Length: 242
Image (cartoon, rainbow, N blue to C red; front, top):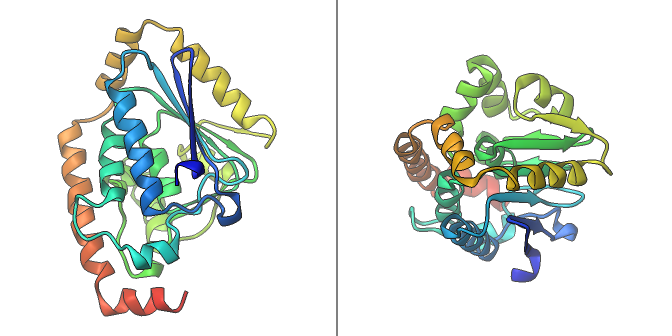
C-alpha cells in the first residue's frame, strides 16, 4: 500500500500524496499504517518543519468500504485510530490541499490541519449516521467549536454535501481556488512556513491548539462508540447493502 501513499522530503517540507485515483483515494487499513508512520516520524524529526498533504483529483472518499468490512477497527490500537492520534497531536503545521471529494475522515482530517486550500469543485461530506456509526477524529467537539452548533448539526446529522464556497463561509477552509491552482498555492505556503524560525512556529501552533489531552480523550471516546455502533446489527445491515 506504500504505492498509494507517496512522500518526499524537500527543504523542510514533508510532502504526502494520497494516490489511489481509481478508488477516489479511499483509505485502507494498510494506508492508515503508512500515514501514521509518516506523521509519527515527521513529528520526531528536526529536519521537517511543515507537512503538506494532498490527494490529486480527489482528496479522499473516506474509508474503503470493502477493506473496512474485512478489517473493521476492533479497538483504539486499530490503524485508523492510531493515525487519528498521531495526526491530531502532530506539533508541525499541517497544510491540506483539497480537490474533489473529501468524505468522512477526508473532512474531519481538515479540523486538525492548520491551513486548508480547496478547489471550487471540492465536496465535503460526513455520512457517519447514514452508515449507522458516530462521528470520529474529535469532530463531535471540534465542529461545533469551529462552525457553531447548528451548522455542525447540519453536517453531522444530515450528512449533506457542502460545497467549497459553503465550507469557506463556515470557516472550515481558508481559500477557494481553481483546480489547477490549489496544490501550487499550498506548496508555496508550505515553503513560506518552512523558512520561518522553527521553534517560534511550532510554539505558536502549540499555543493556538487547545489542550491536546482533552481532544485526545474525545477521540478515544468517539473511537469506542464508533466500534460499538459498527458492531451493531443496524450498521452491519447498512454496510452489507453497499
